[in-house]
Length: 101
Image (cartoon, rainbow, N blue to C red; front, side, top):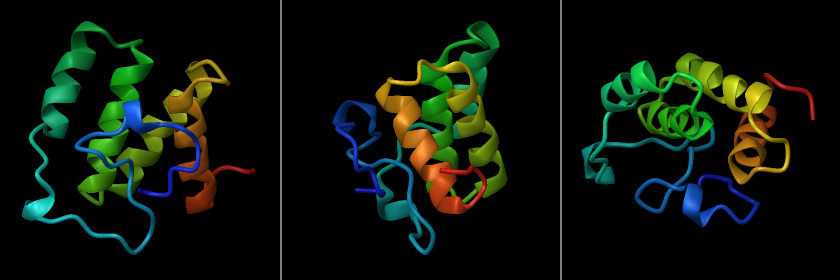
């Protein structure tokens, strides 16, 4: 779901990764963690790539595209290239046209 083509089930929130263009998320999505929760966690662990990825997923579900791009750019820039989070973040950014394949 969410355009994830790499094995990334453990990277999903409520079973879903970041939505692709045209997908919308409403109150029925079952999101239980807001972007403020991740931002607060990042205050204590600002270099935690997993938190940045999770924040990006939440922001994408809230259709906050620019903030999602910022979070995923951080994941791609700082994360290990072979990590699932980096692969999914890179794929999302490429799909959005803000990162070269």
